[in-house]
Length: 401
Image (cartoon, rainbow, N blue to C red; front, side):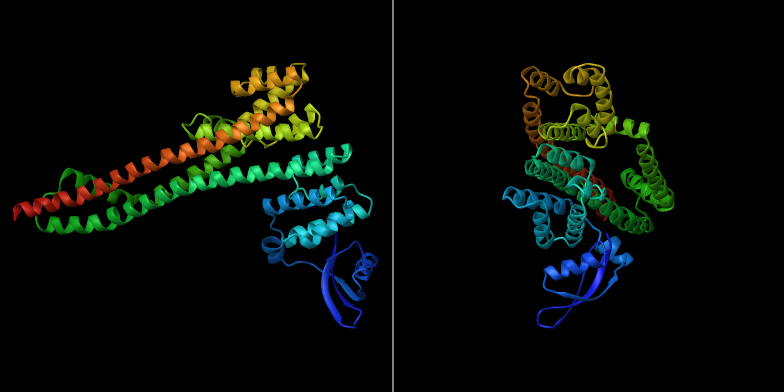
């Protein structure tokens, strides 16, 4: 939808300048007339590269969650869709999101459905969003679907922030360890060793070993750095392929502690997504198709989910198809089988989502609790080794005196 810069006159005769989105000059004139403005001049406005790519086109998940939250509240109050969107276009704090909402409103005014209007922005609204909103429009339960979607996206953001917070401490420890090794082994110890050699003091084996490591890294740091970077790039490119990504993600599930975190988060996403879409009225086929497309965050489990979908299409029950595919925990299989038997599949997945949500947070806390003593032991060991490498020859000097 084009954006126009305009000059208009208000009721007092004052010149007003601004910009807005409109389908054409006539629509722009009508929008300004509703605001009590008379259009004087208008021209298409093209955003610069900086404002478009860096400042004007950045969408956060929080912005989308707030849009869903405000929209379902206004719809529940009884406002029509166009009025609700117009209200959101004014009140949303994010300027790029306000522009998107304004374009959605104009598309609906031109005869499009809400789903068709938001589908024009695939980088903002994902396939899961579109599927749930489409079902809400078709069943007349759009406010409830928007509420469920906002709650689900809020949960995803909470899990993501929890994992990020968990990664801060080990990242800090690694930086500290590298800095300590660089300063003490790369500068302090070689200077001290040179002085002791000039004094005729025989260096202990521990000091010679540390000096050897120092000389090795000084001589080959370029090769080591390039090898590390190339190895990281190679792993990244391998995991970008279908087969390579599946294998990398499969081995990631077997890692101690970290594998449990990844598995619990994937099962929580599976359960929450399934419950949300099932409650919205989506078919089992539609649910499996969406869940198999980068929703779980683990390609191996997504491949197993596709295999389970093939079994469902072959006539198997959901629990049997999960069991045949493999990779899913017994608790999930039992809960799904019970939900199918009692006709409460959505309730079973909702309870599973709550359980795995708690388990994901618990395993993250366990990982943090395990990293802290390990990092302390590692730091203590490295500091102790370096200090001994320095103090042992000094003790020899003192002993000679």
